[in-house]
Length: 420
Ligand SMILES: Cc1cc2nc3c(=O)[nH]c(=O)nc-3n(C[C@H](O)[C@H](O)[C@H](O)COP(=O)(O)OP(=O)(O)OC[C@H]3O[C@@H](n4cnc5c(N)ncnc54)[C@H](O)[C@@H]3O)c2cc1C
Image (cartoon, rainbow, N blue to C red; front, side, top):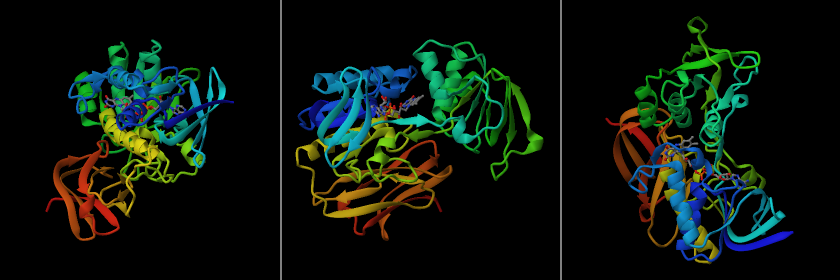
């Protein structure tokens, strides 16, 4: 069997994997290898040809491929190696071994002192949300349609309805209009937007596309191809209200109904998974429950902005490199991060406190939208950090910074409370 040795192995060559690989090299790591199943690097960004990337990380507006190219260039300059066309099948954490199948070498094992998981996520499909009706052609996930239109030059339909107000759906609504299609509606089950407000403004409002909040599709019609969809308003119980049902004649339905972190490998390796994020639980070093395995990007929790992914992945890369070099700070106390009022989850889920003081950013999403709130991190009764926010929305990730020296208890809670 073909065998490769390295210091840090990264699974996935998207923005998370590339940023982590560059950071590992910058930290002084020896051999860093990125294993990618695709024939090229860049991950999902290769199909995101719209602008909107890099605004915070590079302070300029880039397209997805441009953003990925910056990291790819730096990775090459710093001597990161790539194993492309290689699908990872298994991680043997005790042995620090990755089993993958490579187009050229067949079954291949990669041995590494530390491993970084950066496999991204996949879209939820019609099967995940069980829409009733027939099974015609013309139902796509928004990301699959994006890949067909942007990378394979294949138009997917002419009269389009979009279910879900996630970012990919809204971005595809605009894309379909620019490609000459008609977009009849974006239909969202919740009474708030699932994606970023800026995408609603730039992709729906600017093109006059109607958004129906608190609505869902009740049935798909069509024999060989989609012919139309029935949709209705939903009540507080999220069940359709029969009397409000309407019909839209269309030939295509795009689904933008959520993402699932790609964690089959993680589960098989018996690494602890958060039931809320469906990603591995990590500490502030992005270290999982297996001390030689780190994780970053959408495989940990779904990020709306590639810029946030790059920042988080830099940490994973730097600390994975330190682990490989045997110089990761020794943990003196473990602190659990707990979601308080109106917080769905926190990432990292724990803080590994060492002797030296550290600033740690706790990322989170709220459960429901609110305005004029205070975001507060507490340890017992002690307030570690507090800031006001004019508006919070489940579609937009928030964060608050704490200092490890301030933590007195074994628990930190973050809450979002209405200003009194
Ligand atoms: C349609 C869309 C539009 C977006 N628009 C914006 C935007 O305008 N601005 C912005 O900032 N962000 C945007 N984002 C978000 C951003 O692109 C993502 O947050 C980011 O790409 C996540 O990076 P990642 O590396 O974690 O995952 P990915 O980019 O998905 O990369 C994961 C990589 O891992 C590889 N992989 C998975 N499993 C294996 C395996 N078993 N073996 C080998 N390789 C494997 C995959 O092939 C892939 O290359 C958008 C995302 C999408 C989907």
